[in-house]
Image 1 (cartoon, rainbow, N blue to C red):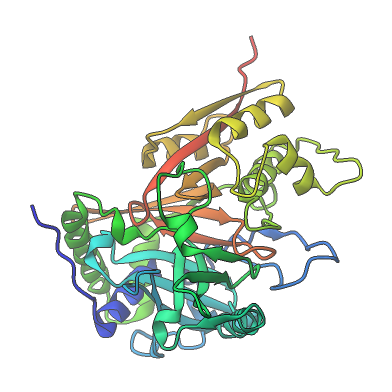
Image 2: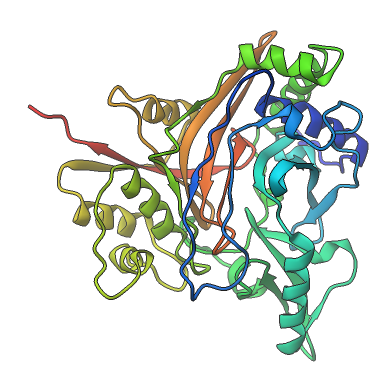
Length: 403
């Protein structure tokens, strides 16, 4: 069957954003869970550390109505081949926060809504200006037009540039200002757990069309649950309560370089179990980077497992190479009070600490709550629609059963 590929217009994407956002709003006296942020060490420069929540009260939004919620223009994000990937819609919230819904701009991605972020406002324009300044100093020429903003290795954002006097392209990462060669990291075979440049449009799922139709149908049905935003949110709250690990135990730690996301994810999991990390004269993330054998391109899954095992005596560590949503649910809802897990995608590692499923007139929408160490020195938490991005693996860290 031929997969359908066409650009989603902005107004359709705006409706996707509205339908997706109501899953993560509260009304009445409902509370949100806010991960405890770690303050970056003084020597770290760049964006400030993120503050995130798993939900937002509709009265804390700047425009709490269906018509005004995402009235601004979308931020369009492309892949390194010039194809539009995502449209971000943002609405401000109290306390310098924002709700940002990342929608798909192409049905080949399989899910109309990719993720929903509620947290400290992301200063994309400021980060772009910093990246452009560095690019010019390095002799790079930033592309003109909207195609310059790229998601070059999900979820990493960068400024696409060309080298003067050469026919080569480079990406300047918006968060850590690392410069990546498109040719070097997008060609040839690279292990999925190591850094690479890739596009979700290059690897569409065979079920993308079916999942897209189901996702659009779910969004449309959700918006018909009430005449106004509060009615819809009230109906969704009853139908799809979230399951999120205690935010007093789950701490968000950002990565400190472009390559040590695996060490940051391990730090979050170890913190949850209150495992002491005694790095001596180096930082904790530096100690874990050494333990996991993090190199310039990251760490392999085998090295990650060996690193966990070297530090943990009374735990079993297992690698899952065919991750499913059900497996994540079993970990988070474990009989011992639940536990987070490491989640791998192409070239990146995060931790998962929550899940949510809505079944509406037979259409199921599932999401996982991601603790992402990227952006570098910032990190963020967000809800990610299951199936929107292909997962490559889980690493499960479980306490051994006492005899």
